[in-house]
Amino acid sequence: MRILTVFKIQSKQFLRSKMAVFWVVLFPVLLMLLFGYVFSDVGETKYRLGVQLKDEGEMGEALLQAINQTGAFEVTMISHEKDPREAMEEEDLYVVLVIPDGFSQNLTTSLMVGGNRSVNVTVIYDPGRSDSGAEVGLLQAILSDFIWV
Image 1: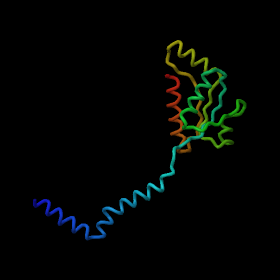
Image 2: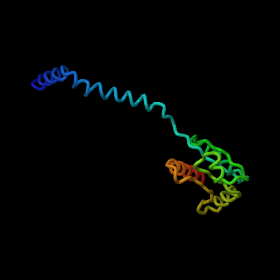
Image 3: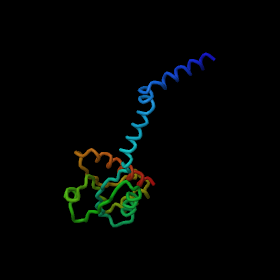
Image 4: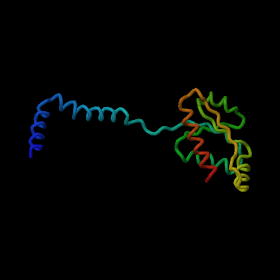
């Protein structure tokens, strides 16, 4: 019974102090609303990826579809004749994936033999850009999942 009485007295004293009510209740609520409003339009991040598809087999196209299905990359195709490093500068890209000629055949052979399931692709990126590490990591995860599926 005493605890209830002390609680009532302390609550009345707290509610009488307008500054205490502001700093304990209203300020955190206002701060949450402000940050919620400011960061509400962040959305999902979509990275730009250049892809040079030199392979003419099914697996190269399937890899390209797998990258597109993630929704994490906005893919820009680079022609066979163009140097990927030049395309990076011209298209303002920070990561380029080169799928070499014979990719499908090498992947199929690797899967049939049951070996180490490794095939070569080339990833060219700008190490001076902070986002390129995240883009390369995401691309590695997609490539790893594609080869092991």
